[in-house]
Each structure stands twice: as C-alpha cells, then as structure tokens.
Image 1: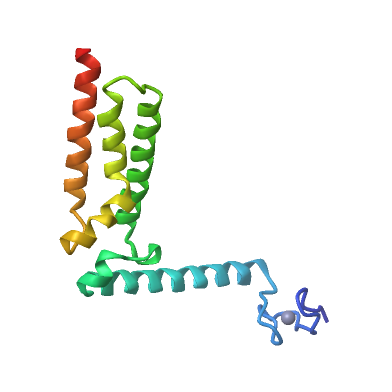
Image 2: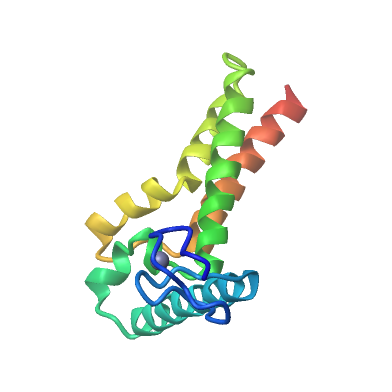
Length: 148
Ligand SMILES: [Zn+2]
C-alpha cells in the first residue's frame, strides 16, 4: 500500500486523495484540485465585484485592490506606468520649460492623486477627467517642446 507523500498515512492504490490530510495522490487529482481552487477564487472575485457596483459611495471611493474589476486594475496599472513614465522622462529634461507641465501631467494621472480628489469633492474625479487633465498638461509640454 502506498503512503501519502505529505503526511505518510497509508493510502489506497486507487484513491485520488489522502483520507488523512486531503492531499491529491495523482496528477489528475492535483489538477482537479487546482481547477477547483481557481473556480472558487473566481467566484469570490466575481461576487465581490458584483456587490461593489451597488455598494455605498463610501466604499466605492476607496476600493481595496481585491475589489477592483479587471478593467479598473488595468486602468490603474496603465495610469501608474504612464504617470511615472511621463515624470521620469520629464525629469530628464529639467530645467527646460516643457518639463514642468509634463511632470504635472504625470503626477495628475497617478491613482493616489485621483484618490486625493475624493476628499474635497465627495467622490474621486472620473477617470476620463484625469485622462483629460493629463492630456492637457502633456499637450502644453509637447507644444512648449516644439515651439522652443
Ligand atoms: Zn496525507
């Protein structure tokens, strides 16, 4: 009779899981368990996102990373990359005049800044507004760069 690799309890030849600790005993069982855990995680994430939509304004303003939908996560990551990227590029051009609006643009689009706007305004500025602010400052920077 084989024994469980995890807890050394005797396991039947044909059993897929250890009766003692539940460890999968075959490749198939391990994959099955992985898929099960994956599905459970997706279900939890899915129901979390669903309730988030109808949630109160307070929790919407400060969602934890787990509550964010894929799209929001993508936006957040993109904002960080774009924001920091712009600031880093702009810093290399200091003290040229076009560097300052570019730095402001990069800072403006960073998610923590957007969260700061929730305090005085009651709710965070819309993502489109943040993108607009970024576009305006970036355009000023590019225009200065082109003109000077
Ligand atoms: Zn076991």
